Amino acid sequence: MTQYDYLIVGAGLFGSVFAHEAAKAGKRLKVIEKREHIAGNIYTEEVEGIQVHKYGAHIFHTSDPKIWDYVQQFAEFNHYVNSPIANYKGEIYNLPFNMNTFNKLWGVVTPEQAQAKIEEQKQVLKGKKPENLEEQAISLVGTDIYEKLIKGYTQKQWGQACDQLPAFIIRRLPVRLTYDNNYFNDKYQGIPIGGYTAMVEKMLDHELIDVETGVDFFANKEHYLADFPRIVYTGMIDEYFDYCLGELEYRSLRFESEVLDTDNYQGNAVVNYTDAETPYTRVIEHKHFDFGRQAKTIITKEYSKQWEPGDEPYYPVNNDRNNELYKQYAEMAAQTNQVIFGGRLGHYRYYDMHQVIAAALQCVRKELDNHSSGI
Ligand code: FAD
Ligand code: UDP
Image 1 (cartoon, rainbow, N blue to C red):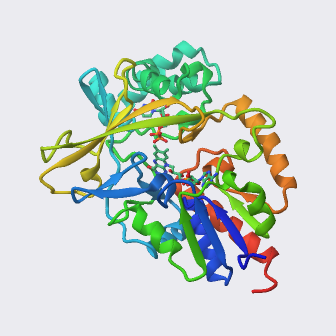
Image 2 (cartoon, protein in one colour; image 1 turned 135 degrees about the vertical axis):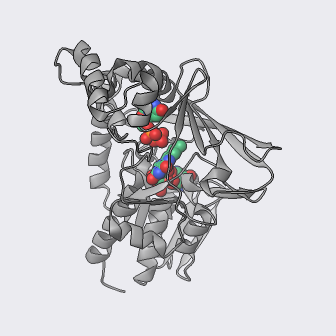
């Protein structure tokens, strides 16, 4: 018999928050992670004195003071505010869509003028309720912005035409009639000083937690199921069930990083390339997340691609077909009493970090309430 109370599959944010809280309550846990490092997709690595976001730009944001307080115990956050810019065939626009964007595009100066322009352009919808991303985008910002800043980027990002995609994806972005380039509406925002990996390291630093990296759950699934009384699984839910009901779709990414012998390459942390022809979606210049003053810089080009076995599944594709299939897997999961499914892949949900933390805290509290005997 194992001496552990839990096996945690995946040392990402969900698994690490769960492990931290359960250990604090006296539970003994083993965490296995198939990559060679902890922290999942928020992993950062120091190169040339710069914290490199290895799996894409990560900006922490939340409006929930409890979640903001929670993360402060593991890291000090800087005052970075995300203000990406869009490059459309050499023309530069501010994001998210706001008065700076409208002014540059249409020459309008007042919110009333911008609103009138959007109203005029959304007439192409003839009052129809938006049912897909294309209609939703046009109804929010009109046809010009849709054509220049949304259509090409979205098609590259998701590999599908905008009229085939769910409307909620574009509703993630604020639309503002103010001159405010903050990408998020949240009360709190920042990036952990010293990187996300150090933050997750602190979560997992407990005498009751053992971590093993480079270990795949599926190499020994039956043995783990036999040995551990409870398992928290944060990998792909369809993979757990051996794809028995069919495959869920994911989007994957490819990152190309370069060290450049210049101190400032693009003048901003994030530049989105919104035309259809540029093969990458965005270029990240990592030092700007930390106001870095190093002599060199590191940039990463992000390419989107269809997920295939062996790729990292970065994004769930939450269209009707996949959501329906996920529901069936979730029903199977509910019957699997020994295993708790969690995180972006276990819940097949387009979660941001604060939502993953909230979900993990809720899950671990419920779990500890239900299994409190023996502490
Ligand atoms: P993951 O980080 O995916 O962790 C799951 C872990 O399980 C992985 O490390 C995986 O290797 C491991 N695993 C899977 N299967 C197995 C197995 N069989 N055996 C062992 N281990 C296994 N959120 C924000 O709030 N702000 C942002 O700016 C932001 N930007 C993002 C940019 C990109 C490009 C992406 C992809 C996501 C972004 N997110 C952002 C979302 C954020 O990354 C997630 O919310 C968060 O990392 C999810 O944590 P998780 O633990 O659920 O999943
Ligand atoms: N989007 C866009 N143009 C942009 C930025 C975003 O059309 O310049 C759309 C695109 O469909 C994207 C969605 O808005 O998938 C959500 O953007 P976000 O920046 O939240 O995506 P993430 O950082 O999660 O990849």
